[in-house]
Image 1 (cartoon, rainbow, N blue to C red):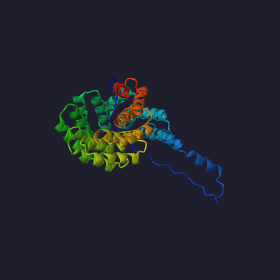
Image 2: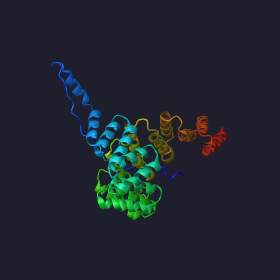
Image 3: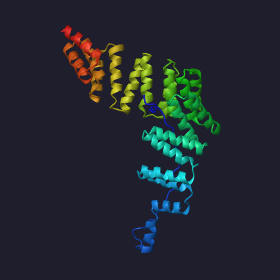
Image 4: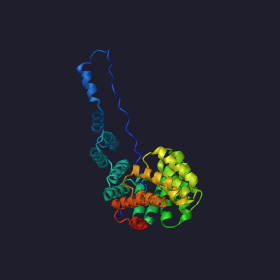
Length: 346
């Protein structure tokens, strides 16, 4: 496995945007501006203003940083990256440039280069908490837990309100089986930042894995923070389904379809409830068909609809669906066995 496969979080740089630029407007009824005025207005483009600031203060990294941010707004990431490089040439301790370059390389999945930028940041700007947090995240993915704790503790010594640091400590504790400390760290993260959506999701998943009913509270908090998000509603629906609170589960799957009408899984799971828990085979066929309509290559939906058809005594339809599942996934063993069984029943 590639040690640089990331899958759960990346601390975003929070660089301030540069100041707005004044724009001169001329009303329709005004006299035509003189050529000197027109030239003066033309000279006041954002790029010209930024270039002038750099010429005036060539050793000021903020001037290059401002131009880099403007270039990002103009969809010129390479130009922005180069300007952050110039900012570092002006001042190698300018943390924002290290942070931005590391973030850009990470988003491009150039993980080793991103890691090198973070190490450069901590060498020249050791007070950068964003670099410490990002460096800790790399260490967690590489399972270098002691090193990760060191980065996180260094960051918290500078700012004890860094919810991301407590959250990542929780991740380490959970990964190493220290569940009580994991729970405490996750809870601290959302206490520090009650708007930390990812923290509530993580707590919900963590407690749901232990069948702790408190998972429901955290999923609902995440839903309140992001009412149009599918993830907490789906997680809570699955939590209810596993607890056989089926009406509540179905209600949430319906809510998901209201948010995201093309969500095939919400349809499939309703079919599964009707098939496996309630033996309501007509309803199961309906919902598996809805899932297939949304995702035509949903081999599990074809297979389960085949089971529902078979339970209704519609053997030919069941065989057809088992065959469709196998055409999509030829090594789908359970579908092959079901088809053989159904053929014998004819």
